[in-house]
Length: 384
Image (cartoon, rainbow, N blue to C red):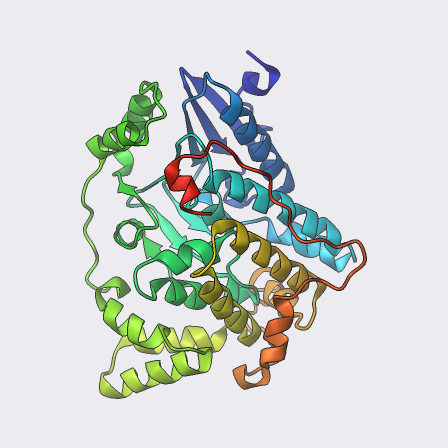
Protein backbone atom coordinates (compact mmCIF):
# COMPACT_ATOMS: atom_id res chain seq x y z
CA UNK A 1 0.00 0.00 0.00
CA UNK A 2 1.56 3.33 -1.00
CA UNK A 3 1.84 6.33 1.29
CA UNK A 4 -1.04 8.11 -0.45
CA UNK A 5 -3.50 5.32 0.29
CA UNK A 6 -2.34 4.61 3.82
CA UNK A 7 -4.00 7.70 5.27
CA UNK A 8 -5.92 6.82 8.43
CA UNK A 9 -9.08 8.68 9.44
CA UNK A 10 -7.92 11.31 11.88
CA UNK A 11 -9.80 14.32 13.21
CA UNK A 12 -6.98 16.68 12.23
CA UNK A 13 -7.30 15.80 8.56
CA UNK A 14 -9.38 17.86 6.22
CA UNK A 15 -9.99 14.86 3.91
CA UNK A 16 -10.58 11.46 5.54
CA UNK A 17 -9.64 8.52 3.35
CA UNK A 18 -11.06 5.00 3.68
CA UNK A 19 -10.09 2.04 1.53
CA UNK A 20 -12.77 -0.61 1.07
CA UNK A 21 -11.76 -3.29 -1.45
CA UNK A 22 -11.57 -1.50 -4.82
CA UNK A 23 -13.48 1.58 -3.61
CA UNK A 24 -12.04 4.70 -2.00
CA UNK A 25 -14.24 6.84 0.24
CA UNK A 26 -13.21 10.48 0.65
CA UNK A 27 -14.95 12.48 3.39
CA UNK A 28 -14.70 16.28 3.44
CA UNK A 29 -13.91 16.92 7.09
CA UNK A 30 -14.42 20.53 8.19
CA UNK A 31 -17.96 20.13 9.59
CA UNK A 32 -17.85 23.37 11.66
CA UNK A 33 -17.14 25.30 8.43
CA UNK A 34 -19.79 23.25 6.55
CA UNK A 35 -16.85 21.61 4.72
CA UNK A 36 -15.98 24.84 2.88
CA UNK A 37 -13.10 24.03 0.53
CA UNK A 38 -9.74 25.28 1.81
CA UNK A 39 -6.45 25.33 -0.09
CA UNK A 40 -5.37 22.17 1.80
CA UNK A 41 -8.59 20.31 0.91
CA UNK A 42 -8.40 21.17 -2.79
CA UNK A 43 -4.74 20.25 -3.00
CA UNK A 44 -5.35 16.92 -1.21
CA UNK A 45 -8.35 16.04 -3.41
CA UNK A 46 -6.32 16.81 -6.52
CA UNK A 47 -3.47 14.59 -5.30
CA UNK A 48 -5.84 11.71 -4.45
CA UNK A 49 -7.90 11.84 -7.66
CA UNK A 50 -4.77 11.92 -9.85
CA UNK A 51 -3.29 8.92 -7.98
CA UNK A 52 -6.52 6.89 -8.02
CA UNK A 53 -6.97 7.35 -11.75
CA UNK A 54 -3.60 5.65 -12.35
CA UNK A 55 -4.04 2.97 -9.65
CA UNK A 56 -5.53 -0.19 -11.20
CA UNK A 57 -6.63 -1.37 -7.72
CA UNK A 58 -9.10 1.53 -7.51
CA UNK A 59 -12.35 1.10 -9.46
CA UNK A 60 -14.62 3.70 -7.85
CA UNK A 61 -14.36 6.90 -5.76
CA UNK A 62 -17.11 7.91 -3.32
CA UNK A 63 -17.11 11.50 -2.00
CA UNK A 64 -19.22 12.69 0.94
CA UNK A 65 -19.21 15.38 3.64
CA UNK A 66 -19.06 15.06 7.41
CA UNK A 67 -21.93 16.67 9.32
CA UNK A 68 -24.90 18.51 7.84
CA UNK A 69 -23.21 19.69 4.63
CA UNK A 70 -21.63 18.00 1.65
CA UNK A 71 -19.80 21.27 1.03
CA UNK A 72 -21.11 24.83 1.36
CA UNK A 73 -18.63 26.34 -1.11
CA UNK A 74 -15.12 27.70 -1.05
CA UNK A 75 -13.40 29.24 1.95
CA UNK A 76 -14.40 32.79 0.95
CA UNK A 77 -12.96 34.39 4.07
CA UNK A 78 -9.44 33.14 3.33
CA UNK A 79 -9.69 34.30 -0.30
CA UNK A 80 -10.88 37.80 0.63
CA UNK A 81 -8.15 38.04 3.29
CA UNK A 82 -5.50 37.29 0.63
CA UNK A 83 -6.91 39.94 -1.68
CA UNK A 84 -7.24 42.58 1.06
CA UNK A 85 -3.59 42.00 1.94
CA UNK A 86 -2.71 42.81 -1.65
CA UNK A 87 -1.95 39.24 -2.62
CA UNK A 88 -4.78 38.53 -5.07
CA UNK A 89 -2.34 36.23 -6.90
CA UNK A 90 -2.55 33.81 -3.96
CA UNK A 91 -6.30 33.68 -4.57
CA UNK A 92 -5.64 33.16 -8.28
CA UNK A 93 -3.35 30.22 -7.44
CA UNK A 94 -6.15 28.63 -5.40
CA UNK A 95 -8.57 29.01 -8.32
CA UNK A 96 -6.02 27.58 -10.77
CA UNK A 97 -5.79 24.47 -8.58
CA UNK A 98 -9.55 24.29 -7.98
CA UNK A 99 -10.37 24.56 -11.70
CA UNK A 100 -7.74 21.92 -12.51
CA UNK A 101 -9.44 19.59 -9.99
CA UNK A 102 -12.86 20.29 -11.55
CA UNK A 103 -11.50 19.54 -15.04
CA UNK A 104 -10.11 16.21 -13.83
CA UNK A 105 -13.43 15.34 -12.12
CA UNK A 106 -15.42 16.28 -15.24
CA UNK A 107 -13.24 14.06 -17.45
CA UNK A 108 -12.49 11.33 -14.90
CA UNK A 109 -11.89 7.84 -16.27
CA UNK A 110 -13.44 6.13 -13.25
CA UNK A 111 -16.88 6.67 -11.75
CA UNK A 112 -17.19 9.21 -8.94
CA UNK A 113 -20.26 8.88 -6.71
CA UNK A 114 -21.01 12.04 -4.69
CA UNK A 115 -23.35 11.58 -1.73
CA UNK A 116 -25.08 14.97 -1.42
CA UNK A 117 -26.74 14.46 1.96
CA UNK A 118 -26.94 18.12 3.04
CA UNK A 119 -25.86 21.55 1.79
CA UNK A 120 -24.31 21.72 -1.70
CA UNK A 121 -23.43 25.27 -2.68
CA UNK A 122 -20.91 27.06 -4.90
CA UNK A 123 -17.62 25.16 -4.72
CA UNK A 124 -19.47 22.12 -3.34
CA UNK A 125 -21.35 21.93 -6.64
CA UNK A 126 -18.01 22.18 -8.46
CA UNK A 127 -16.66 19.19 -6.54
CA UNK A 128 -19.69 17.00 -7.29
CA UNK A 129 -21.97 18.00 -10.18
CA UNK A 130 -19.19 17.38 -12.75
CA UNK A 131 -18.79 13.78 -11.53
CA UNK A 132 -20.57 10.76 -13.02
CA UNK A 133 -23.12 10.08 -10.25
CA UNK A 134 -24.73 12.56 -7.84
CA UNK A 135 -26.96 11.11 -5.14
CA UNK A 136 -29.43 13.53 -3.54
CA UNK A 137 -31.43 12.83 -0.37
CA UNK A 138 -34.28 14.46 1.55
CA UNK A 139 -31.59 16.56 3.32
CA UNK A 140 -30.05 18.02 0.14
CA UNK A 141 -30.08 21.80 -0.33
CA UNK A 142 -28.55 23.14 -3.54
CA UNK A 143 -27.88 26.80 -4.41
CA UNK A 144 -25.47 29.01 -6.33
CA UNK A 145 -25.63 32.13 -4.11
CA UNK A 146 -22.78 34.04 -5.78
CA UNK A 147 -24.66 37.00 -7.32
CA UNK A 148 -26.01 37.91 -3.85
CA UNK A 149 -22.34 38.19 -2.80
CA UNK A 150 -21.30 40.39 -5.72
CA UNK A 151 -19.72 37.44 -7.51
CA UNK A 152 -20.85 35.02 -10.26
CA UNK A 153 -21.30 31.21 -10.31
CA UNK A 154 -17.86 29.85 -11.19
CA UNK A 155 -16.56 26.24 -10.64
CA UNK A 156 -17.63 25.30 -14.18
CA UNK A 157 -21.22 26.34 -13.40
CA UNK A 158 -21.54 28.04 -16.79
CA UNK A 159 -21.15 24.50 -18.22
CA UNK A 160 -23.64 22.60 -16.02
CA UNK A 161 -26.23 25.38 -15.49
CA UNK A 162 -26.46 26.02 -19.24
CA UNK A 163 -27.28 22.33 -19.80
CA UNK A 164 -30.28 22.15 -17.44
CA UNK A 165 -33.75 21.98 -19.03
CA UNK A 166 -34.86 25.17 -20.81
CA UNK A 167 -33.60 28.29 -19.04
CA UNK A 168 -33.71 26.80 -15.55
CA UNK A 169 -29.93 27.27 -15.26
CA UNK A 170 -30.17 31.02 -15.85
CA UNK A 171 -32.89 31.14 -13.19
CA UNK A 172 -30.73 29.26 -10.64
CA UNK A 173 -27.56 31.24 -11.39
CA UNK A 174 -29.16 34.69 -11.26
CA UNK A 175 -31.49 34.28 -8.27
CA UNK A 176 -29.59 32.08 -5.74
CA UNK A 177 -32.76 29.96 -5.44
CA UNK A 178 -32.54 26.91 -3.19
CA UNK A 179 -33.50 23.48 -4.48
CA UNK A 180 -34.25 20.36 -2.47
CA UNK A 181 -33.22 16.81 -3.41
CA UNK A 182 -36.39 16.08 -5.42
CA UNK A 183 -35.88 19.24 -7.50
CA UNK A 184 -32.19 18.40 -8.01
CA UNK A 185 -33.21 15.03 -9.41
CA UNK A 186 -35.93 16.30 -11.74
CA UNK A 187 -33.73 19.03 -13.27
CA UNK A 188 -30.72 16.72 -13.69
CA UNK A 189 -28.32 18.16 -11.08
CA UNK A 190 -28.66 14.80 -9.28
CA UNK A 191 -28.67 11.44 -11.06
CA UNK A 192 -30.37 9.53 -8.21
CA UNK A 193 -32.42 10.14 -5.06
CA UNK A 194 -31.74 7.83 -2.10
CA UNK A 195 -33.41 8.31 1.31
CA UNK A 196 -30.70 9.08 3.88
CA UNK A 197 -31.52 6.03 6.01
CA UNK A 198 -30.41 3.83 3.08
CA UNK A 199 -27.06 5.57 2.51
CA UNK A 200 -24.94 3.24 4.66
CA UNK A 201 -26.42 0.22 2.83
CA UNK A 202 -25.77 1.89 -0.51
CA UNK A 203 -22.17 2.63 0.46
CA UNK A 204 -21.66 -0.96 1.55
CA UNK A 205 -23.07 -2.26 -1.75
CA UNK A 206 -20.94 0.15 -3.81
CA UNK A 207 -17.77 -0.97 -2.04
CA UNK A 208 -18.46 -4.58 -3.09
CA UNK A 209 -19.04 -3.78 -6.77
CA UNK A 210 -15.41 -4.25 -7.93
CA UNK A 211 -16.19 -2.63 -11.28
CA UNK A 212 -15.73 0.70 -13.04
CA UNK A 213 -18.64 0.02 -15.40
CA UNK A 214 -21.05 2.97 -15.02
CA UNK A 215 -24.03 0.76 -15.97
CA UNK A 216 -23.28 -1.65 -13.11
CA UNK A 217 -22.76 1.17 -10.60
CA UNK A 218 -25.94 2.92 -11.72
CA UNK A 219 -27.89 -0.33 -11.29
CA UNK A 220 -26.58 -0.69 -7.72
CA UNK A 221 -27.60 2.89 -6.86
CA UNK A 222 -31.02 2.26 -8.46
CA UNK A 223 -31.66 -0.58 -5.99
CA UNK A 224 -31.60 1.94 -3.13
CA UNK A 225 -33.25 4.83 -5.00
CA UNK A 226 -36.82 6.01 -4.83
CA UNK A 227 -38.92 8.56 -6.69
CA UNK A 228 -39.20 11.53 -4.31
CA UNK A 229 -42.23 13.75 -3.79
CA UNK A 230 -41.97 17.12 -5.55
CA UNK A 231 -43.40 19.88 -3.37
CA UNK A 232 -46.44 21.69 -4.77
CA UNK A 233 -44.74 25.10 -4.68
CA UNK A 234 -41.63 23.99 -6.57
CA UNK A 235 -40.58 26.51 -9.24
CA UNK A 236 -39.94 23.54 -11.52
CA UNK A 237 -43.73 23.20 -11.97
CA UNK A 238 -43.71 26.58 -13.74
CA UNK A 239 -40.76 25.91 -16.04
CA UNK A 240 -42.80 27.41 -18.91
CA UNK A 241 -42.91 30.79 -17.08
CA UNK A 242 -39.20 30.54 -16.20
CA UNK A 243 -38.39 29.81 -19.85
CA UNK A 244 -40.50 32.77 -21.03
CA UNK A 245 -38.74 35.19 -18.68
CA UNK A 246 -35.18 33.86 -18.38
CA UNK A 247 -34.72 33.31 -22.12
CA UNK A 248 -34.63 37.10 -22.56
CA UNK A 249 -31.41 38.59 -23.91
CA UNK A 250 -30.50 40.89 -20.99
CA UNK A 251 -31.03 41.01 -17.22
CA UNK A 252 -33.18 44.15 -17.66
CA UNK A 253 -35.41 42.29 -20.14
CA UNK A 254 -35.67 39.31 -17.77
CA UNK A 255 -36.92 41.63 -14.98
CA UNK A 256 -39.38 43.35 -17.37
CA UNK A 257 -40.72 39.95 -18.45
CA UNK A 258 -41.21 38.94 -14.80
CA UNK A 259 -42.99 42.25 -14.10
CA UNK A 260 -45.33 41.59 -17.04
CA UNK A 261 -46.09 38.13 -15.58
CA UNK A 262 -46.80 39.80 -12.22
CA UNK A 263 -49.44 42.04 -13.86
CA UNK A 264 -51.25 38.97 -15.18
CA UNK A 265 -51.33 37.12 -11.88
CA UNK A 266 -50.43 37.75 -8.26
CA UNK A 267 -47.87 35.16 -7.37
CA UNK A 268 -45.42 34.93 -4.43
CA UNK A 269 -42.85 33.19 -6.62
CA UNK A 270 -42.78 36.02 -9.19
CA UNK A 271 -42.49 38.80 -6.59
CA UNK A 272 -39.77 36.93 -4.65
CA UNK A 273 -37.82 36.31 -7.90
CA UNK A 274 -37.99 40.01 -8.82
CA UNK A 275 -36.90 40.96 -5.27
CA UNK A 276 -33.99 38.53 -5.42
CA UNK A 277 -32.76 40.00 -8.74
CA UNK A 278 -33.09 43.56 -7.45
CA UNK A 279 -31.13 42.72 -4.27
CA UNK A 280 -28.21 41.14 -6.15
CA UNK A 281 -25.11 42.89 -7.49
CA UNK A 282 -25.94 44.44 -10.89
CA UNK A 283 -22.42 43.67 -12.12
CA UNK A 284 -22.62 40.09 -10.78
CA UNK A 285 -25.96 39.55 -12.57
CA UNK A 286 -24.70 40.81 -15.91
CA UNK A 287 -21.48 38.81 -15.94
CA UNK A 288 -23.36 35.73 -14.69
CA UNK A 289 -25.90 35.87 -17.54
CA UNK A 290 -23.19 36.41 -20.16
CA UNK A 291 -21.17 33.53 -18.68
CA UNK A 292 -24.06 31.02 -18.79
CA UNK A 293 -24.98 32.08 -22.34
CA UNK A 294 -21.40 31.54 -23.51
CA UNK A 295 -21.32 28.24 -21.60
CA UNK A 296 -24.15 26.89 -23.76
CA UNK A 297 -21.76 26.86 -26.72
CA UNK A 298 -18.55 25.78 -24.98
CA UNK A 299 -17.02 22.57 -23.63
CA UNK A 300 -16.06 22.21 -19.98
CA UNK A 301 -12.40 23.19 -20.61
CA UNK A 302 -13.33 26.41 -22.44
CA UNK A 303 -15.81 27.29 -19.66
CA UNK A 304 -13.13 26.89 -16.97
CA UNK A 305 -10.54 28.94 -18.90
CA UNK A 306 -13.08 31.75 -19.35
CA UNK A 307 -14.27 31.58 -15.73
CA UNK A 308 -10.63 31.75 -14.54
CA UNK A 309 -10.19 35.03 -16.45
CA UNK A 310 -13.40 36.35 -14.88
CA UNK A 311 -12.34 35.33 -11.37
CA UNK A 312 -8.97 37.07 -11.74
CA UNK A 313 -10.67 40.33 -12.79
CA UNK A 314 -13.09 40.08 -9.84
CA UNK A 315 -10.25 39.45 -7.38
CA UNK A 316 -8.29 42.39 -8.72
CA UNK A 317 -11.36 44.54 -7.99
CA UNK A 318 -11.60 45.91 -11.52
CA UNK A 319 -13.84 47.36 -12.74
CA UNK A 320 -16.15 46.62 -9.76
CA UNK A 321 -15.31 45.88 -6.11
CA UNK A 322 -18.73 44.34 -5.43
CA UNK A 323 -17.32 41.01 -4.22
CA UNK A 324 -15.63 42.77 -1.25
CA UNK A 325 -18.82 44.68 -0.43
CA UNK A 326 -20.92 41.52 -0.71
CA UNK A 327 -18.56 39.67 1.61
CA UNK A 328 -18.71 42.53 4.11
CA UNK A 329 -22.52 42.89 4.08
CA UNK A 330 -23.55 39.22 3.94
CA UNK A 331 -20.77 37.32 5.72
CA UNK A 332 -18.76 39.78 7.85
CA UNK A 333 -20.92 42.59 9.29
CA UNK A 334 -24.09 40.67 8.36
CA UNK A 335 -26.08 43.88 7.91
CA UNK A 336 -27.40 42.35 4.64
CA UNK A 337 -27.37 45.80 3.09
CA UNK A 338 -24.62 45.86 0.44
CA UNK A 339 -23.94 49.13 -1.36
CA UNK A 340 -23.28 47.91 -4.90
CA UNK A 341 -21.21 50.05 -7.25
CA UNK A 342 -22.49 50.56 -9.96
CA UNK A 343 -25.79 50.53 -8.09
CA UNK A 344 -28.15 49.99 -11.05
CA UNK A 345 -28.21 47.59 -13.98
CA UNK A 346 -28.34 50.41 -16.54
CA UNK A 347 -25.05 51.78 -15.13
CA UNK A 348 -23.21 48.53 -15.90
CA UNK A 349 -22.12 49.10 -19.50
CA UNK A 350 -21.41 46.40 -22.09
CA UNK A 351 -17.77 47.52 -22.07
CA UNK A 352 -17.57 46.84 -18.33
CA UNK A 353 -19.04 43.38 -18.83
CA UNK A 354 -16.68 42.72 -21.77
CA UNK A 355 -13.67 43.55 -19.63
CA UNK A 356 -14.32 40.54 -17.34
CA UNK A 357 -14.02 38.21 -20.32
CA UNK A 358 -10.74 39.63 -21.64
CA UNK A 359 -7.22 38.49 -20.81
CA UNK A 360 -5.64 40.21 -17.81
CA UNK A 361 -3.30 43.05 -18.59
CA UNK A 362 -0.99 42.18 -15.74
CA UNK A 363 2.66 41.21 -15.87
CA UNK A 364 3.23 37.50 -15.31
CA UNK A 365 -0.48 36.61 -15.54
CA UNK A 366 -1.42 33.77 -17.88
CA UNK A 367 -4.56 31.98 -19.01
CA UNK A 368 -5.49 28.76 -17.21
CA UNK A 369 -3.61 25.80 -18.71
CA UNK A 370 -5.51 22.56 -18.16
CA UNK A 371 -3.74 19.18 -18.05
CA UNK A 372 -3.83 16.93 -21.14
CA UNK A 373 -6.33 14.07 -20.75
CA UNK A 374 -6.19 10.72 -22.55
CA UNK A 375 -8.09 7.40 -22.88
CA UNK A 376 -11.30 9.10 -21.81
CA UNK A 377 -14.70 7.36 -21.72
CA UNK A 378 -17.29 8.54 -24.24
CA UNK A 379 -19.32 10.53 -21.64
CA UNK A 380 -16.18 12.52 -20.72
CA UNK A 381 -15.24 13.17 -24.36
CA UNK A 382 -18.77 14.56 -24.92
CA UNK A 383 -17.98 17.33 -22.37
CA UNK A 384 -14.97 18.60 -24.30
